[in-house]
Length: 392
Ligand SMILES: Cc1cc2nc3c(=O)[nH]c(=O)nc-3n(C[C@H](O)[C@H](O)[C@H](O)COP(=O)(O)OP(=O)(O)OC[C@H]3O[C@@H](n4cnc5c(N)ncnc54)[C@H](O)[C@@H]3O)c2cc1C
Image 1: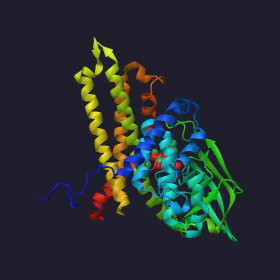
Image 2 (image 1 turned 60 degrees about the vertical axis):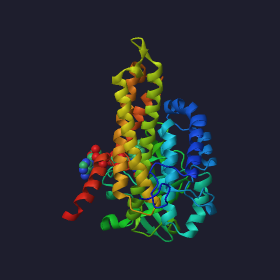
Image 3 (image 1 turned 180 degrees about the vertical axis):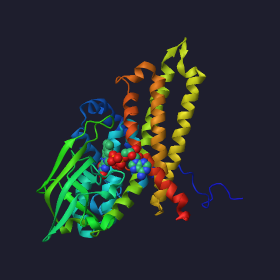
């Protein structure tokens, strides 16, 4: 038998290293002290405060995996996941701002950009420039590679024409990773990734959506009318954009899983606190077994989601593929986020249905988890394909 503490014994999945614990505690403090007081006002305004975005940069939360040589934190993917989870407990809008920056934009640049491109853009992404990741269009959502935005060669540049829809962070962003096709006849093999800066001629950010949930996170249309983009701004090679999109989204989904996990944890924490205070029939409602059973099931849902999300994140840091694990984590965490937030609203009773208490917002915020970065159906397609692969 192996002795306890033997290095051959793998640590529990949810056991955090000392560094991870310290990092988690600092994000938790920021979320409680700086973010929480503004959540309701930002939800009502449908806008995220610029001073808080600045603080996200100053706290290193927009550059978690960017190496120190590019002015980032030199942290792990798992730390990004911890940050997204902690922020989502308090505000899922803050969580998705950090998620897109770290798990999609920075991740793509770190993996695919040249050394020169990294020197140009990573310090900006680390210090001050919010970033967006633009794949979706009006006619291509789940079928993302049917995109129509066109990139035509013009001397040392490409001219980009088209419209992107649903782009997170776009109201604030200065850097945009935009997917367009250099050859529509080549299907997905024409798709190419371009780094577009906000002030490029022919580029503008269009209408901002008025949404059900994550209202403080901006979601906008992008308009490209003969937008001139230097060839030196192609990330990866022309025609390789589909690979960049697939690889980053496979990992990005773990981030959405973390957002939904944190949201559910936030809802449970509110429900626990309220159930101990609210009295009916002469006692705290937490004393009723019916309420206790709800709370217990919420905790089981959360623990199961945490294991899926943490496992996928640790796999990614170990250099393992996360295609199926990321899809499962996102699929399950978004399912339980809706369920847990809904139960939390019920535990609050009538006041849970009002904007005076935070669970109403978490319930609205949960819905997006089953839609963006691939709908629940698309996650099931991915998982089933892996199961049935041998039939091909
Ligand atoms: C708030 C928000 C933020 C977003 N942020 C970004 C972003 O930053 N960048 C970006 O590029 N995109 C972003 N998106 C876009 C998002 O990824 C898409 O909305 C999503 O992929 C779904 O595409 P769609 O809306 O076109 O729905 P559709 O693809 O039209 O799907 C409609 C329904 O049909 C189902 N369906 C479609 N195809 C199949 C199939 N083969 N099998 C079974 N069911 C299917 C879907 O599951 C869904 O229920 C965002 C969207 C929202 C709402």
